Length: 400
Ligand SMILES: *[C@@H]1O[C@H](CO)[C@@H](O)[C@H](O)[C@H]1NC(C)=O
Ligand SMILES: *[C@@H]1O[C@H](CO)[C@@H](O)[C@H](O)[C@H]1NC(C)=O
Ligand SMILES: *[C@@H]1O[C@H](CO)[C@@H](O)[C@H](O)[C@H]1NC(C)=O
Ligand SMILES: *[C@@H]1O[C@H](CO)[C@@H](O)[C@H](O)[C@H]1NC(C)=O
Ligand SMILES: *[C@@H]1O[C@H](CO)[C@@H](O)[C@H](O)[C@H]1NC(C)=O
Image (tube, rainbow, N blue to C red; front, side):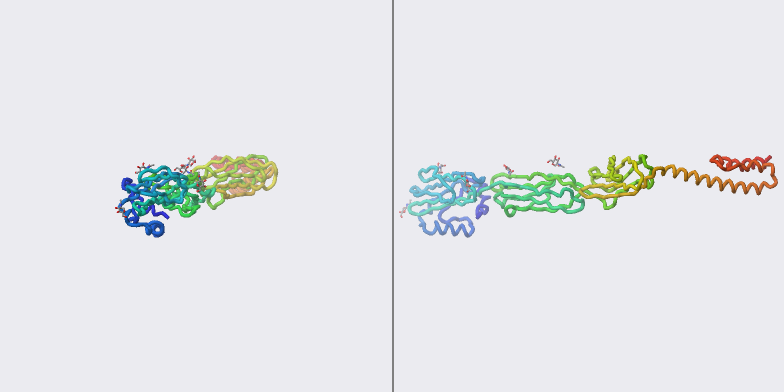
């Protein structure tokens, strides 16, 4: 169907060398064209007309689909008769004169082969020209990308191209920004062009698009490009580990304290979403990111006793990681702790005091005078000080 490409380059480069055809065309044609010429024109004609040539202008034209053109069939044969244009396209006679006839072809929507024919001194002459139609793709569309793409995994770009002619000159290029990732001939209609890409951190927020290139430069025209709407990719890294949640195990009801939740190795950390809750109560964390580390800090407070669950949930790329802990809230857990502390200290003091007393009593058997001063009652917190002083007072008495 497209003999045009077999000899186009030569014709376009030297338009003056318009192909002049006699009854026997000299250029290579596919079998179907040979058959056509042989069947309809060549065989019945005589040999006399060979001395005169029938010219078709323009030769091998490339026009946009739906366009029109004027075809002029002319010859130097002095007695040319019945100059006609054979075509499947709708034609109108646009004028004629001695040795020429012109035809107006309109609404050319498909590639076409036109033939001029005439008789010169009883012999038939023919000459042909090929009209190539080009049309831009009706649509070039890149399929939606995954909303979030894990870094290190492959994803596929799918581009659909509808229409576009001639296909032999139509390629599709898949792009990241302006970088061509893949370049392929557009095959089929609609055509699906795909490329597989390994997602990286650098692809986060990159624009991907699909561009068709109808390169008619070899046909003497220019390069026509159509580009799809860009699609923006978001890539992410979410470690498999749970966040680190730092909360005391026992807390007192009614007091405020700090909840810290941290997760490392997130990308892009600043785009993660943090949900922090104490029981049914949503906390409002202050979220900060440093590099790949995300930290959420909130102040929490429980007004009821009981065991509450504290949950920290970090979501990125549609996936979440969760940490939770149980904290016991007590009305006076703090005073209990304080009392326990005091008791422990007292216990230590009493034991130490008792031991010291026993020790000094035994050793000071000779120094009866000092014995009374060491026997202070150990009933209050101040007894701590007494214990400390005792050996020194004993030492003083020894020295005296
Ligand atoms: C057709 O070609 C002939 C010969 O070149 C020329 O004289 C004539 O003006 C042309 N006609 C048109 C309509 O271009
Ligand atoms: C051109 O031709 C196409 C089909 O070949 C037809 O659908 C269309 O209506 C035509 N346009 C004009 C302006 O004649
Ligand atoms: C036309 O053909 C006749 C014979 O058929 C010949 O005598 C004459 O010379 C030819 N004229 C031209 C112009 O070729
Ligand atoms: C991607 O495209 C959008 C609009 O189409 C633009 O605002 C943005 O700057 C582009 N991003 C990059 C990285 O080129
Ligand atoms: C394709 O690009 C051409 C110019 O290169 C433009 O005229 C045409 O409108 C574009 N088609 C679409 C569908 O955008």
